Amino acid sequence: MANSNQLRENKNQHKPKNKQSKVADKDIYLAMTDIKNYLEERFEKWLEERDLVIKYEKNLSFDTMINLIKIKNIRNVFDENFSTRTIKPDGGVLILRKESDQKYYKVIIIAETKHQGTNDLRLKEGLRKQAQGNAIERLGKNLTGIRAMFNHEKITPFVCFGSGYDFKEKQGFVMSKISMLNEFYYLNRIYVNKVDGTSDLNYFSPVSMYFRYDNWTRKEMFEIMKEISETAIRYYLF
Image (cartoon, rainbow, N blue to C red; front, top):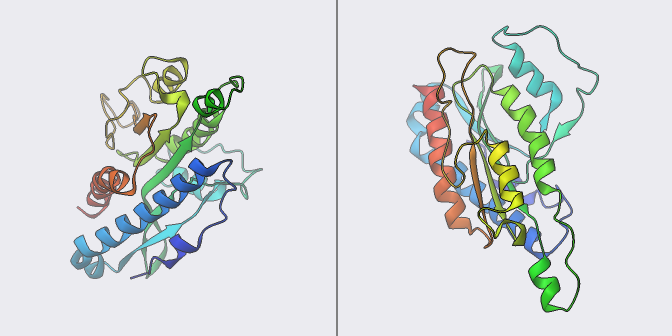
């Protein structure tokens, strides 16, 4: 099995804006390490029998995402002018690969973490409030491509952990944006399988969006990601 050192060594994926972001980035890397180790132990027998390994990747290229869309021949028109560009989820990606077939590429989980809002700290320091940040807009851009990539699958194993002042009000403006990003499904719930559809091309794709004021701990993220990733790997294996 591939080791997990790459997860810990990937320190410079982003340059976090503040201390809270640095803590969140570190904790989600560690949680992904825990998930990789858990899956390798939990599914060791089936992985070995099928010549499969779990790999960690820090980003996804547009080319990779487009190729995954092409697999089922659902569409044949693609703008490939930006195929070398990448998205870089804060927590990275776990991939199921086959040693004997380099084309075998199944995404187990994609993890993001977003920290937005420091007005509580600014008020304590006697400073004016700032406008609400744009972390959610960046999240929306990535999620659009991720949903397209999983269009031909019955799962969307994506999770985002958000924390900060901007997410304090459960009925606030920013939270309404996140609700819309999640196709008007509930927040702070696990969604992996497509739902409410009547055909392969008519399913909704809610994802696991966890947002609150307080930071998420490594253990909390692990417990949520464990269910998401285990559901995904079972979908591919069985």
